[in-house]
Length: 248
Image (cartoon, rainbow, N blue to C red; front, side):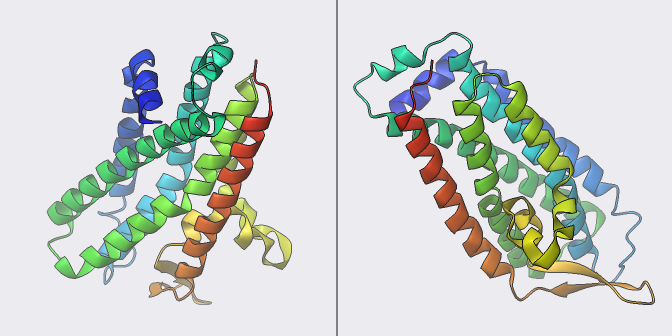
């Protein structure tokens, strides 16, 4: 499988993996605008973290949709699937190689954002080692929460030759992810597009007097577990669909 990943990296444009870094810079710049206008002065780090998560929920899925599409389109465009399938490897390993490339891109994004997030926070907010555990927990939770979204996006990109459709789905779901909360009977909470918001260990609360405060959440671990379970199911379904369907 690692051989396939190395082959893909050699034949793909290396600049495509600059996209997570560029997206991370945009997320940090937009999130950092909230530092000077922090409405919750007693919780500057927490407020900064929530702002980063909000900006990330739009830009990261869009960048991953582009990367998944590019990884799949490198085979669709030149009709090299049959050539790849002649390798003495199972189709499942080919699928997991593509998935690992997406996970590597995700890690590039979040590691760069976390380093920049801490660096900017130390400069403009101040040193507070007590928030390091909160930051680390939040970033690890976000990495896990985005796995179902990445797996779903890769599934669409691998199966559908015309990449306009997977890209449209990825962009639409990123822009309108927050609107999924309005689904009735708490259905929105179980749509995996909302997991990145639900897994955060903190949340913003606004009371009747429009006063804002940040509280610790008690059910974030539930959504981390749901992300793992649903992510594994989507990966399994995508792998089975990929291995049983002839892609030309």
